[in-house]
Length: 310
Image (cartoon, rainbow, N blue to C red; front, side, top):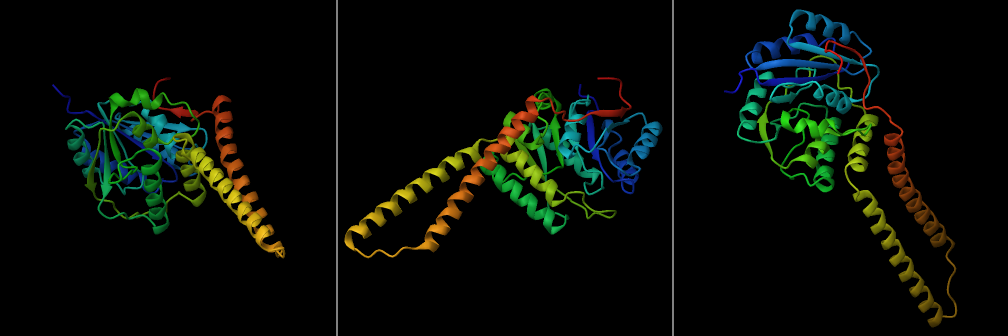
């Protein structure tokens, strides 16, 4: 017989001292009958979020918290929390109340049909246009790099069958991308249309720098396509160079007076130099990430936790 309390919830916490108490209270009210544990992972937040998590954990034994020594990033924090879940299903939610707890029940009903992962697909995405643009770009590139179904939206609001977690948390790279890990483990995926609320308190902590870092993690950690594109680009430049050389020789044979174009030479040098530097940069990113991985760069370091040592 399936246990009624078969759900764990993992919430990465960063700069959310104003929104977290209300978000947790609503989750416990709406999902109290199905929650086994609520895990709050404080990702090096510089505000009072940690103390709020301590207080919440003291008030309800279903609430657990983990405090990381510094800001490792959202995906690292979630991966840390996934190491501690014990229920049959685990939902990933944000700390700003933009994910209505009632929508978790929709995802829970869907995953019980036999799916491994169910993503929340927003009716209307209430993020800033800049964040929405970044998400659209991420989903488009994920379809190209990781064979994601084009009609599937990768959102941070999702529910996962816990039987997948051993393969997920076994990843040891310092820059994880959770959706990439899930996509390489299973293609038994689904999505449900859910509500997305406007943010009432504070603003998103995702900056252009963090979005670029996320994109690089996706590009370089979960696909060799950028290296293949470099090969294609190099081959195209080679064909173009040979073609232009043959054209120049033919023109020289036909006409004794061939104009000398300093501008074309200058542009060619700049173009080829730019291509070479771009290729070296991509290769350098791959080598740098390999170095950090083999150098033992940690995904996360726990400073304080309400869990027993693990």
